[in-house]
Length: 221
Ligand SMILES: Cc1cc2nc3c(=O)[nH]c(=O)nc-3n(C[C@H](O)[C@H](O)[C@H](O)COP(=O)(O)O)c2cc1C
Image (cartoon, rainbow, N blue to C red; front, side, top):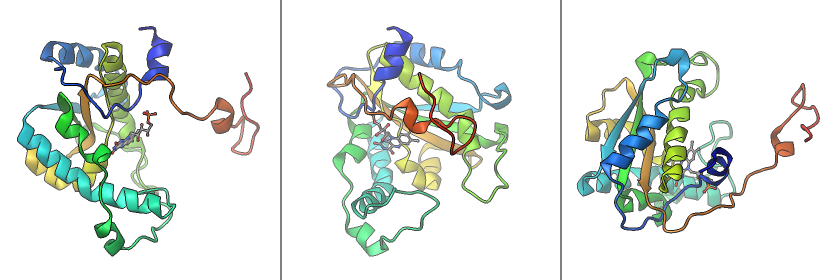
């Protein structure tokens, strides 16, 4: 595929056919994705490739608690899990909210699930002392994660970058034998999408650009 077509059509695939995603193709995808950038080129990523149904079952269960809160906050008109505005949603409401299948089922149904981890001993977390949630550390692993999804699209496959299970990271680490200094960045169900979406909803360039200052005018074509 042409690069811009891949970039404009790599959607979040959550419904998969029964087609397999062979190791040979997965290897090819990862062999291209590995050219992603990382801080100091330290390449702290590790990928755990999961096909075992029992493990996927547990991944699905670990997704549920965060998904319940996500949906409860959405129903309350909040931006879910944001670290700035405290939630008005009670623990009781969250407990009573059910997690929708589109958030918990893909890891069961996909041909394969990739758990992408990053070794925090290799990441320069430049914003770690700021009085806000850290974002910089992710920069040393999400370019790789996105490369995986772009390459998968190029090969006719698809997947979704998911993070809900990471709210249960200690359990994920125990389940998969991941050391405590290695963070889980993404859980990616991958397979052949039932339908290939080609029109993604994204804001226009004028909606997110500010020339010279935050209050500057948007960039024009
Ligand atoms: C950092 C990040 C975390 C995400 N976490 C989840 C998730 O836990 N579960 C999920 O189903 N989708 C998750 N997504 C996928 C987004 O919901 C999806 O990209 C967005 O809705 C746009 O969908 P589209 O790409 O199909 O247009 C995540 C995406 C990003 C970038």
